[in-house]
Image 1 (cartoon, rainbow, N blue to C red):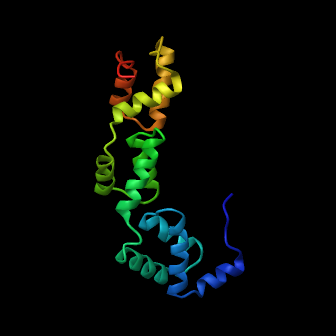
Image 2 (cartoon, rainbow, N blue to C red):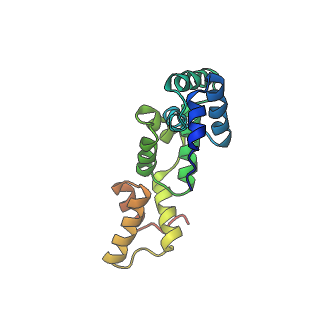
Image 3 (tube, rainbow, N blue to C red):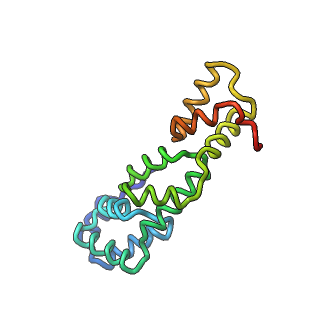
Length: 166
């Protein structure tokens, strides 16, 4: 359930000073890491003035309390552990306002063998036996595509020899 501030708290938020915005940002960061744009958007949705939000976020970045690299590293690691592929991770990061070189560097720095991750995801869902026919192969390919693996990774995960190195 999404919680929105009450109208009277939105009015209070509009009157807030930089310290109040910083306190709200720190409260959000206490729960998990955020990207700069995602944190800014959350604070703006709560009704804080844009000037105060920008100043507070810039101060948090300067003090290294808000780090895009730390956010990316944790995000990529967490989603790779869930069995998500690089394409899905990129798409979810794009939705959160993080794009470009930083994402590619985080994917490389994670040190994930994406081919092996695709094989593990397939085995976990469908077992060790390779797909018996075209229909089963297509079903498994759609599953891996939804998980965010590339066509090359999917072909390799579904191909012969997948049951090696179990």
